[in-house]
Each structure stands twice: as structure tokens, then as C-alpha cells.
Image (cartoon, rainbow, N blue to C red):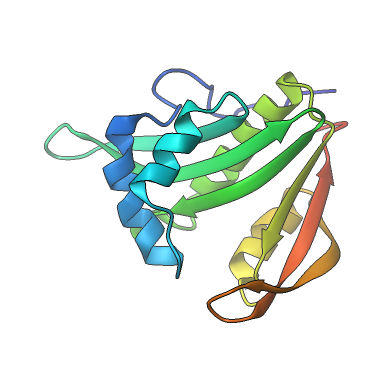
Length: 163
């Protein structure tokens, strides 16, 4: 398996920590009708099979603000993308792509051979990103989103070669 080039490296500044959660929750509430709680993120960052990553930016006060985050599970030879979001004012700058590519690289390093995700059929921008990165639709999950009853598209990507 080949790792991709020019992605963010996973280092202590990239891995989500408890101090990042307040920023992450602000982004989470922007995009998800049923947002994860602080406890949910705490649970994820402490699990050995979870990979929660952030991209931070220095703001004018020299704080490190989270501008994008992702959460995935890596079990055996499969990765499942659970969350991926970018602050609205930083969308269309490639941050989501960079973060997902870095997560896919980490999945390969941990032995994953494929990656899965669910996405709303109405979320055309997310589908475009996933398709651009090599995911393809393999099915649907009926009534997957409880708040709307919307189906989910199931997408998969082989990690045999990440480009």
C-alpha cells in the first residue's frame, strides 16, 4: 500500500485533544442536526480504535483555533469515517481533503484495506469531495437519519493505493 504525498502529518498538534473540544463543538453544531456532545468527543479521543484529528490555525490572539476536524474508527482492516467538518469561512480551501487524506493514510498505517462512510443524498458537496478522493456509492441505508428520515448513501474506498 502506498501512502499519499503532501498531507498533514499526524503529530501531537494534529490529534484532537480535550482542549480542542469546545472549538469542535461549535463547528459540530453548525452542520449536524443532532450534534455529538462533549462526552461523545471525550469518549472518542480516549479510544484506541478512534482517530480524531484537527487542523488548527493561529488567530490574531495567538490562540490555536480548530478550523477542521474529523473522527474515524479503525477496526482491523476497515476504517469508518464518522465525522468531517470545516468551519464555514474556511470551506473550499482544501482543508477537508487534507484532513481526510491524512486519516486515510493513518488507516493504511494501522492496517486498513478499505474505508467506509455514510452521507446524506442531499449533501452534494460532501459527496463531491468523497468521489474526488476515490469513494464510490455501494448502497443505501433506509431512514438512516432519525431527525429527517432521510436515507444514507454508503460509500467505500479501497485503500490498496492512495493517490
